[in-house]
Amino acid sequence: MRTATFYTLATLALIGCSSPVTDDDLPEPDPSKLILVFGGRQENAPRCDPDGQMLWEGWTAWSEDPGPDECEPCECTPAACVLPSEVSANRVVCPGGDPVVTLIGGDSWDGACKAGAFSVTSSSYDSVTFEPPTLADCQPVSPVPAPSRKNMSFVRACLPGSSMIIPSFFRQCYLPQENGECWRGNRARFEFPVYTDTRTCTPCSCGAPRGGKCTAQTTLYSNEDCSREVGSIAISNADRPICTEAIDGEIATMRSAWTQNEPGTCTPSTDSKIVSGKLERGETRVYCCDR
Image 1 (cartoon, rainbow, N blue to C red):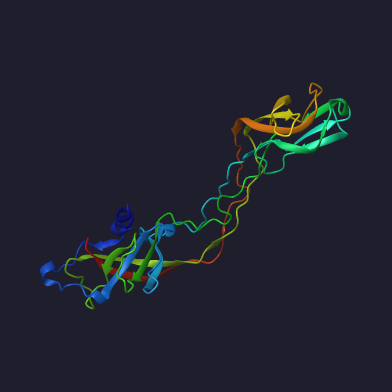
Image 2 (image 1 turned 180 degrees about the vertical axis):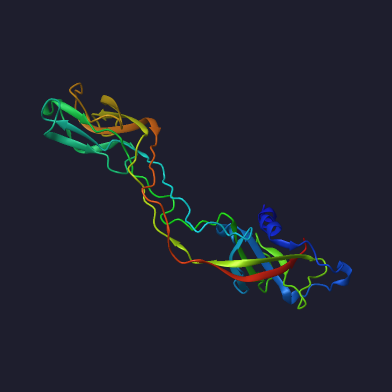
């Protein structure tokens, strides 16, 4: 895979298949001209050896056109289902209100057995209100997207370190001779401009969550380890709070579990645009490889 990643770039950048001089007439490679070259996705680019030296890095276009001067599109994460946050035991009949105690799961509750501040007996309440699940806000996949580089690849060239160990993803090549010719066994010549990209994009943001199918079964218990069930309600994010007078017994703890967990979606509320910087063509780089 490492070779394939590089050759995708190299094949497109190749301007001469090989030196016009036959291999036998070329000198052996000069070890002082050895360089290590990477071409591919920027996040895969290895660092130069600590005691080596970076010669150059930047972006190269697959063709004369480096692509549109725009940002990558904004994308949003799914709107996750969030378990019901509260169950209240009320002093009055439905529609409820005036709670005796409220069991609070909290924003990060995973549905495990959760105790209230204190337990209440059946004579202390006349109804119970179950809050519905909700959808969490979406977040931008990339808060500040990168500039569009659809026609480009990242390139980096280094001098090897004293250990002469070739790190993964690097390819071993040589700078050309002073006369521009390549070397014996390394006749494939590559030449392309390297661009410096200082463009910055505006941040992304996401709209309100929508859709999603989130249904939870929330169960009340009379003891601390959630082993003696008092009553249970299934409630979805499409529901309003459900008030019931059918729960009868001491309420001490609650537990909640998903019966349906299908996240919602959000659409980006803004389009990212180039706010500063530019894509600037730099020097043309030349090197020779074995193929």
